[in-house]
Each structure stands twice: as structure tokens, then as C-alpha cells.
Length: 159
Length: 175
Image (tube, rainbow over all chains, first blue to last red; front, side):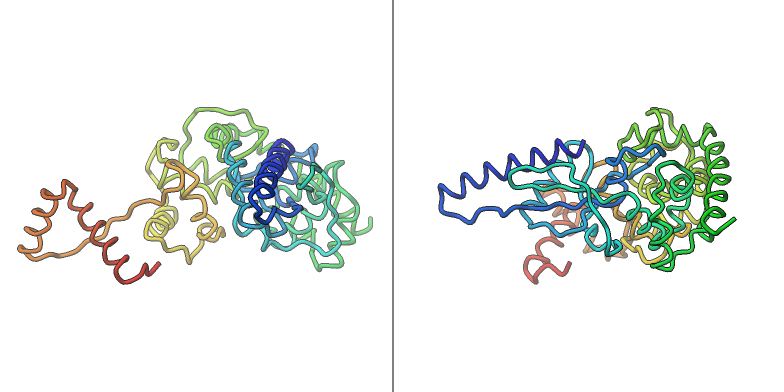
């Protein structure tokens, strides 16, 4: 679902930059969008059941124009950008997978293991059930145990 | 059994319990309606059935805490989703706080600030709820209000809103 949105965002920037060139205005720079949170988990297509509210968290700050356009596009699928999404904590070793690469937009989702660790550290009560399902599933990435040790997350207590 | 295996075993045990809980009709009903309203993205089948606040609280407490984030905003902006208005005391307190724009406390361990963020997304999009505020006015003030209401073809509340806008513009918006 998000791939289509990022494709539309890319097409919009191409058009805006074409116009900017004609009018001698500054073009929109290449934009990387790092999606985290439940939306990234949904896109990761895990076997566990994911419930997500309709806000989309991006880890990096976007320029006003890009953010506003992305929000407008997300509205068409009944989602919206969380204005505080970029304030979320993610482990420093977080790796991202590409979900769309266009001329100006490079969109990636955080790998589930890093999202799960972030949830375990920052909001364990709210995500207890999600973490339970993840740790019990075949989707569980063993790196979560090393990350939990490094970031002082007691998975057993959360469960 | 090492620590990792211990955690996996515990997770599997709890996941089995969780799977059973998810078979509960309350879970399907609440999540189905929230999906129908496009408030939650879930694999549960969409359903137009209404649910009670108690059912939502049970789901929020036992399975999906995100329901607790949404519930106070639903009570304010889209109560038609709910079957009854028999709300527990803490939910009523949370709703009253949100109506007044106060989001300093929490509701069942969910910071009200989180619940507040849902108000513009439920019901009429982009709008925050209205709130009642009582004033005592003298007879001549009431007469002025009534006269202005007739002259400007506005409700009395409308006159006050316009007056507020005027003063906010004149003295700089204080928001």
C-alpha cells in the first residue's frame, strides 16, 4: 500500500521540479523517508497479527512541502503522518529495507527486529501482546536477544 | 534451559493464551467496527456492529491497548459507534478532561495526550470537540447579546465567537 503512495510522491516531486526549473525556483531535493512503527510492521508482511492505528511514523524529519504532500497522499488511504513520529527512539544499529526507490524518493522501512526492540524499551505495556506474538513466532529474529541485552530490556519481565 | 529458551517458552505459552483471547466475540466485534471506521488497520474482518464501552475496555485491557487510546475520542466525536452511554467513572473523567483541552493525566496507563491526538481523526475530520462554559451576565449584557444576535443573524454563541475572533485579531492571537 505504501509503495503506491511513495510512487505518487515521487511523481509529484518530478512535476514540481520541472515547474521550478521553468520558473527559476529552487527544486525539491532527493528525499529519504524512513518508516518505523506499526506501519513498517504491516509493510513487512509478518505472519503475526498486527493491529495498527492510522498514523504513520517516519524516523527522519521531512521538509514542509514534502511532509504536507505525503500527508495529503496518506489521507487518501485514511492514514496520516504522526507529527511527533521523528521523536521516537530507535536503536543506533537499526537497518532499513527499501520499499520504493524513485527519481527523488527513497522510501525504506525499519526491519521488524529493531522496531520490536524500540517498542520493548519505550512502551512495553502497550506492546506486551505484540511482543509476545513476535517472540513466539517464526518471524522472531534472534538479534532481538542481543539488542535487549545491550539496551537493558528485560524481555522476560515484559512477558 | 538457557535464558533465551526460557523467554521463547514463556512467549509461546502466553501467545497460546492470547490466541484464545482473540477468539472472544468482544475482540472481533470491537476490532471489526474500528476497522470498519478505518480507525485501526487489522486482519480482523470489518463489521458494522456497535459495541459497548465495557467491551472496548475489555479488549483494551486484555488484548490491544491501542483501543484504550481511541476510546475517549470515540465517546466525544463518534458516540454512535457505542451501544450504551453507561461509562465507568475513569472514562468519564478522561472524556471531560479532553473536552476541556486538558490532557495532563492518563487513562488506564495511556497518557491522555495520546488520546487527544485522535480527536481530529474521528467523526468530523480536523475538528476538536466543543465544550460548555458557563457565565453569569447582567440583564443589560443579555439584552445586548440578544440584540446583536438578531442584527447579525447569528446565534448567541456565534456572537460570542465572533467577538472572541475580533479581540484575538486586535490583540494578537494568544494561542
